[in-house]
Image (tube, rainbow, N blue to C red):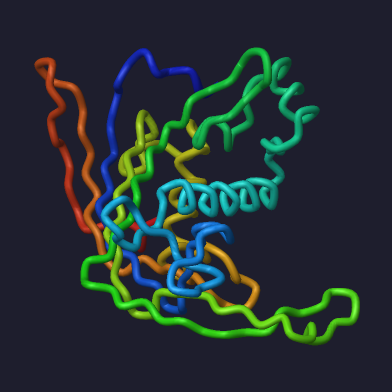
Length: 242
């Protein structure tokens, strides 16, 4: 039985620094209430007006994919948005996906995340573009008269810096049979490398496809009261082994 509540000890830290590339146009929305320069839908920017991809957006699509993979393999996975489902975890304990990304029960057995995902910033200057579309009437299944809107997006081909820390789940040297979370995280990175993940809005029309193009993976353990690097390699080479 894997102990998901192991935050009182640091057995290992896996640090991933990678490069992602958006193969298709990308837009992470700021909300319809923000309309700079006459735009109806602007892209997300930080305090310094830099375009970025929030770590929460990346984590959300990663969790969603891991949930689907786990269910396809017959594993029991909760619905983190359903109170009744979470109350079951008060009795049974967190599901395997909560054991990776956090979640758990309502009144007890709640658990923090074993993975920390940071905001991704472009590795180059980004000039956004705009596109005008017409809204679709879902009932008539046709263009809505006079309902034009303009949205901002990041053009394809931009490289993004990506950083992820994984605590106490050794995806480099760990045993998948003893800790199936390792198998799920390895499957996640294989999918990101081979197929990509869609992030942001308008995914149904192909926007937001991010793929893994390069990276470094490192393993740290505690030795003499310090984090000591014990293994470092190219992320793509590790992913291909998995």
